[in-house]
Length: 376
Image: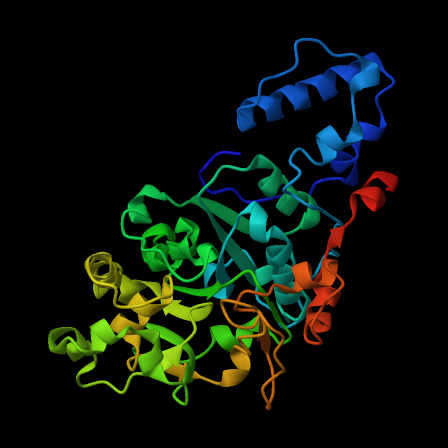
């Protein structure tokens, strides 16, 4: 898979089950070519010799033990009132990161978006990746043969020198900071994008979030003004009068960066990326916050975003960042469930120690065990 953008097309089911037909010499030759291709892409050293008896189904179906196997999702079609998906003005652009560690969550999130959308064919996904993992790309293709999506390489080197150690290692990964660079990565014709984390599912039509009026703001997201905003920054920050001036003239409230509607053009014009990077540079010199990519967003934008209904981010279902203990749902209507925090629903379900809310995620899980995959 090249780093450039690609539109995916429908693949036949035989393309993911070719390993079951290995008796003919021509089939054997094709299998060897596939294995060799994966070995070159993944930087592996191919075995010196092989025989038809040594070919294992798992080699083709699951090249990496880190990448789970998924069943194919159903095809979702537009309703009668939807415009053509080939017209740019009808498209809904959704950006997500893509890597093996969170692939199971990504699959569930994509399925939930499509399943609850009135116009699923009008949704175009933009996946950002930092490590070339061919098996991850092929999983997207085989799981969602009809999906409209593009992929973009995020250069980790751009942010690596700005990352400071946080309270949880997962927050320190360069790809976690890719959302800061959306305006630089998205194609020029994309003026608005919805950014979604991989540990969430939608239970409502994403078009409702897409159509929110930003009122000339750069970003829209649910605000939580009842949260203790001061806890997101250290005493060293609040005791420095010059640093604390960052919020002068604003009424800053906490917002979660896992669900955002971003006006890409306004972000570019306001040079928001550079402003966020400036605060990350300060963090390298002085310890002014503990979390990863969230605090610099707050420093630049808190108190100056378009607030949307809380139903669009029922966050914190993964518990806190240290223990990930179970949490209950907040009262009120729900359009999006978000397992932010340490606990992830697929891990808790696999451990047979799920939280009650994890059963709300399970219906969107496309994962299948290796045993079931080989039986197909």
